[in-house]
Image (cartoon, rainbow, N blue to C red; front, side):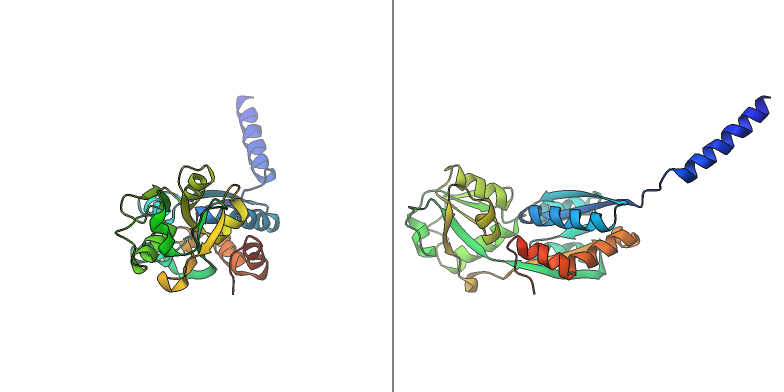
Amino acid sequence: MRKIVGSLFLVLAAVMLCVVPVHAGDLSISAAASLREAVTELGSAFSAKSPDVRIQNNFAASGALAKQIETGAPADVFFSANVKWMDFLVEKGLIDKRYTTVVAYNVLVFVGKPDLKAKTMQDLVKLERIAVGSPKSVPAGDYAVQAIKKAGIEKQLEGKLVMGKDVRECLMYADRGEVTGAFVYKTDAEQMAKNVKILFIVPQGLYPKVTYPLGVTAAGAKKPEAVAYFKFAQSAEGKKILAKHGFIVE
């Protein structure tokens, strides 16, 4: 009798395995903080087409994310806010070269209270505290520091720069009045700022073009859904979502 019951249990277990839907898998997306809303919407749109895929987003400074991936953190897809950190992972063999492309561009701006008299880079020397992303890990901060150096005001701003962990934190500092102004992306200023506004656009000649490369990790390249997501982000629908959030697409 016990053998019969045991056999029936095994049969039922096998049937249940066939009945329970098999999950295609999870996708771990690591994306620059400035892409939070756009990538969240990209994930929702992709999930609508692939309901069996669950997406987990991880947002932070591009450098911090790259270091996480380097040390083994789970990531199938990486959106960087500059080429530097994508190249860093490619050189280490952690990004599959077959699946890398540029998906969008942005513009660096300076924000502050509406009545703040700052219209050019030279006007910044009169200010007290300026927020920039830590240039070692935050692309926006790297772009800003390059612009400051090329504008010839590096010495005048010594002791005035307040480092943020990512570009969104810099905007928050300015919004709260904890700094006089901040270097942020145009997309962040237009969609997230509450108490500050764009005072001027940083001249493009002072820093490299803000570029957002997208790549599939070596681990992600083994997942068909990661490659599908990579292609979706480049599709007309994907570009429309990025453009909706203020990014420049080509």
